[in-house]
Amino acid sequence: MHVLNQFESKNFDFQDRRGTIIYPSCPANGKLLLKPQYLNAFPFLEVAMLKKGYTLCFLTHPTRWGPDSEIHITAEFVKYVAAELGFEPKCILVGMSCGGLQAVRMAQLHPELVSVLYIDAPVLNILSLAGLGASTCRNTPLFRKELIETYDFTPSTLVNFRNSPIDHLPSLIEHNIPIIMLYGDADDTVLYEENGKVLEDYYREHGGDMKVIRKPGCGHHPHSLEDPTPIIEFIEAHL
Image 1 (cartoon, rainbow, N blue to C red):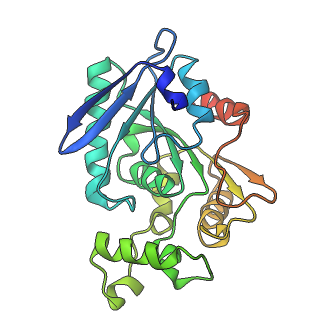
Image 2: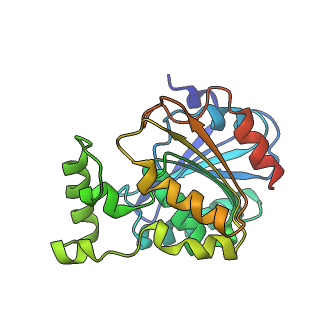
């Protein structure tokens, strides 16, 4: 049994996708978490938050690579879930790896629905994961194949692609989106220098509200922290 199965949940169809709401084990506090990808992966934070009264939601996607069309559907999903629960239509985003890509694009395209971002080893640069950077990751051919299928890339449109999260950073500052980001300094799958560090440097240079936690010697996995207290403290300080 997966650890999230200890909580009451509801599954339902939403725009040809599968939606899930996981209910807290104590009275709900009216606050919504959205995990855009990998629902069952490293849910230390989510379990702790569910025990504190937060409600978790999740929507399946035909691709993990966050095209704008999927982000807009996610926004409609958040509004639907919030209305069903009687919550304010604003959520805390929990984005790991490609979930980080989706989380940041959500904050960029629909900032009115986002209160705070927790991202973990986030994919923020599509070109990096397509193999145009310094990565020697063995999964790069798979990533490139999936990206070509998602975005219908040709060699020319791929090299000229400018719709990664790192290409829209000013909107995060403009809308004062607070961010806590974790990364492993031995991650050879999502290279920090080509992804998270671009965001970190931009926030530092432009006065953004951001906390970064480096995990020495950690690769792409594991995500999160077994004791998620620092993440929870940042989130709750920004609600």
